[in-house]
Amino acid sequence: MRRRKLRLPPYAKSFRFRLYLIFTGTIALLTAAFVSFYVATEAGAYRNNLEREGKLLATILAHNARLPLFAENVKALESLAESTARYPSVLSVSIRDNEGRVYARQAKSERIPDDAVTMAVPISLPSGLSPESALLGHREGNEDRVIGEVRLRLDTSGERERVLTLVVASLGIGTLFWIVVSLLSYHVLKRVTGSFNLLLGGIEEIGSGKLSARVDLDGDDELGRAANAINAMAASLELRELENLALQEELLKAMKLEVQEEKKRVMARLIQTNKMTSLGLLLSSMAHEINNPNASIRFSGHMIGKMLADALPLLDGVWQEEGDFYLGGVPYHKARLVLVENTGKIVENSERIAMVVQGLRDYGVGGTVRQHQKLDVNAAVGAALSVLACQTNKDIQLHTSLGTGLPVVAGSQQQIEQVLINLILNAMQSFTGGHGEIRLTTRCEAGGEEVLVEVRDNGSGIGPETMERLFEPFYSTKLERGGSGLGLYISQYIVAEHGGRLELTSRTGEGTLATVTLPAASC
Image 1 (cartoon, rainbow, N blue to C red):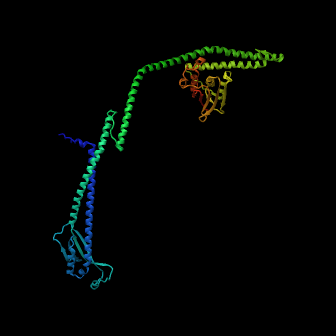
Image 2: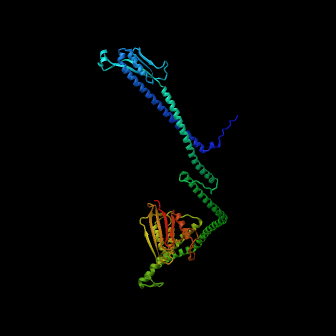
Image 3: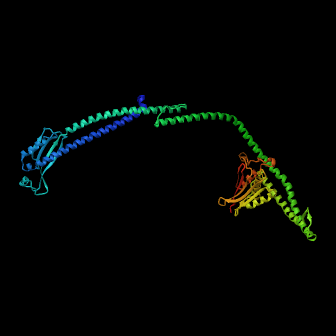
């Protein structure tokens, strides 16, 4: 058989009722505790007063009965007992000696209640006291001698009546107090929970999705401030909802264009891939086309050098015998040095062209940089400046500040020279009026673990839109001046293959700083 679940009335489930029940129950418990404590305290005080009164009466009676008991004067003892029994709280009085013989006894009734308080006080005389000295009041010793006992039985019915009166009065006052406090509590809780219910209703309405709802609750208390905070939150959510709707509309519009944008990005990637494939084919073709005439130039340079070595002694002899003469309009003593220097440069630059072509070929087929040799960065800077000596302009000032004691770098000096040549050429081409200043600096950082080369100019600078595409192949702002768009792309590749970094920072109208960071070679 199923047990029927107890159903509570609707008001019993409310927060107000439960709070009121807890509050009134707590007040009732506190009132009952206070009443109990008060009644117990008063009852104890009454019993203590009764005991003190009995103790005092018994002590007085024992003192007055010393001599009559010592003299066995029964009439005097009965008179003392009768006078003591007249007190309202005394139920019975008895005077007896040490052997238990009762000399006087007075009782108000034959039946003494069991809860009566018994007070017993001994009757004592000083030790060695004779009858004559006792009658005269003389003392012969310091120690007391017990000769009997006074016993009183005290009535406690007054205590019961007082306790009953206190209980009735306390319960009446406590009940009245509980009723008054409960009524006040109900009105206070009704007001508090009414505001709370209003606040909760507003929260539920806002939580259901009606963000335009507001909690109509005024006041400077905690509930009023909570209502203001909830209204502010609802207003913020409503505004956010409107913004979300606007964003959704924009998103729908953007999604309609996303397919076209994605198509454009795919086409851009395909074009970039095609460019890289074309770059590889172009570099391989250039390497093949340049290598053939360059080999002929190098061979011719070697032949001219050998012929010049054989011809110089003959020409020196003619110079010594017949004096100075002209070759191509230049005196022989000057032309001799020019011939020797230029013959060597033909072979040297031809070999440089061959290495550049080989590097281009490596980029085209995905080759790696040979880093078996160790190079001096300052020497690479000097070689790059010697190559650019013929392109310098008197209106462009080139200042160098080379650090001392720089560690060597593992890699190809020819390729690092190529990077520096590209960066210096870019700096030279950044001056719109043809006037400017370039500062080339080398130094060591990171505790000697990195070598830095900085090329700084005060030219026109680079715009933000151009900075994002600087290292893209075939992208150049100098196509009309013969730029290929491969200089920075190849330079970045070389520096990365050397384990370094190529970084450019620029501001329009203030100039550009190019920094090449290379790791020092391990010993």
